[in-house]
Image (cartoon, rainbow, N blue to C red; front, side):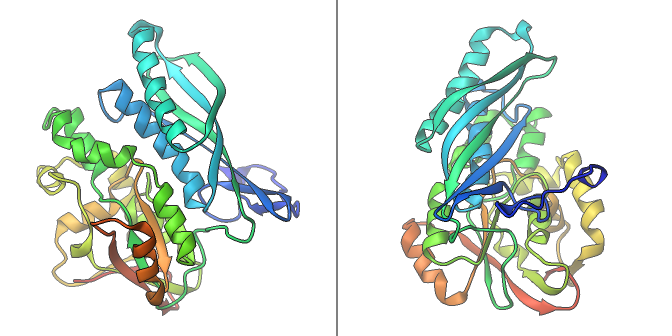
Length: 319
């Protein structure tokens, strides 16, 4: 859609704008400070209003972290049917506020409209060191690809909507979606990450593709290394695939190369649209230990692939 607009955003203060598929825009205020801005909102992915507020808030904040920034302020974006009652809306906003405060940011206000379907999210402003910006592009051949959260939220939320599972069955996924990407972002910066993005609606494959320039670089993914939330495979095998997965598949099919004997399930999970997913981080092999040490978790994120030199812009899926 942006191609249809007469845009001329050539100001030298714009460090990250519309020319790249990055997660947020960055405007240079002075040589030591960049302003990071993003906006994101969506319909409920779980039934519990407080948890929905947490997830939507963490999802919007994630775009700041994916750029290497620190959130400063947030504004609520609310579409809500008055017939559902203000108590429910209050719980959504309470969940969102909890995550804003956990991020060390401040809620300044927002805007609310009466709508037939609930929607909630944030417009977030943050700060970033202009010399330490994480962008989606920047990986080089030989870099490792690290994923910091499991996959499967699109499949599980589809199963929940179809009453194939209860919300309690996806507690791990709900906790993961509500988890901030703050620590992963800080660790990536400390380890000298070369590129970063977060995994959301375009699915794992779509966001890997956003890390590839038009020429010279491809990515090899090892599907059996992909971390999954509990019951993801079970629900996928029962056909609980969201509509967005098919759209992602149609868009990316020409850029995917699947090796022999790759299970259909792994094709499904690569295209599954995620909500508040983890960070995808490109690290030099000798930076991996520093990243793990900085993150300091007992269960470390998975190395799911590697970048390699290629004349074709593609994702190669191999065993």
